[in-house]
Length: 407
Image (cartoon, rainbow, N blue to C red):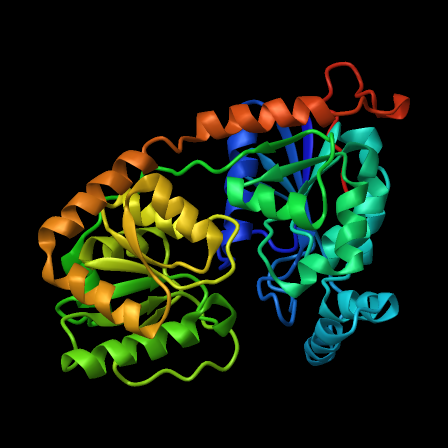
């Protein structure tokens, strides 16, 4: 099948669960024999969209990647307009917000003008960014929207409703995400599926190596992901401070593993590792007692699957329907609702190695079911129902591969 993905950022150094899942899904489809192209930007950072990668066409394994430059965004204006829209919906302000946030990339849009000649189906990742908002009308007849939705004000914007209505099909990561999108935007009788995710076998984790490299406390709770208030990290730090205050510093320290975003000030008792690669992440999981999941907004927690794969229990924010659902289906962790229950549940896990082992074993069994071949099968079922034939001009020459270079 000839498949295209459109995503705002793409690459091994990109710190974002949505982007990491997009990349790994593209690779899995390509490994299964599909002709996969990714249309993206040169950016690594999602606030400034500053160029990090070179423009042009490159290969990421079997995936062909088309990178395009981004017009300068205005993140401060975008934040101001988002606050205005939270109080008063306005179509003109939404359009200004979308362009101020970005990434607006005219080269990518020009490249997609010929999508019907090259790709039978185009999957656009997330409703939140201009790459999807501006590209959807160009490919709507063969488009799958991957919303990666959570219950935030932007989900209810008119621009989001317009993007969702244009899509021929929708791909969801969890039952909770599907229910939310159906409630807010409506699915109707269009093709859709819960495609979920696969998870790769991790490299062997070495807790001693992590301790030497990062200067870790003897025991700790681990957060993995973007170190950002939008991910609930500021609340997590406050909750862990309450745990320390109630328990005389407690048995568990707090380690944050991920690239910082924004100006989040951390107390000196928090250890922040910065961005970690796959090997270092495996070492940190091996060293941790528990993995904490504080984000109120998730469409799927890959970190939860990684933690359970490493037989580590999780402590997740219960007000995230997705985290609560994943935890219930896996049996791999506990939930908290605020500072008091965070301190109680963390103390319970810290004091009970048998409980940690039982939860870790249950989570491990659940994670084993999340294979890439099964995920690819679900994607193929959905894509087969959405795909459209190439236009006549797209027929590749005899013996040719038929891949197109960017315009």
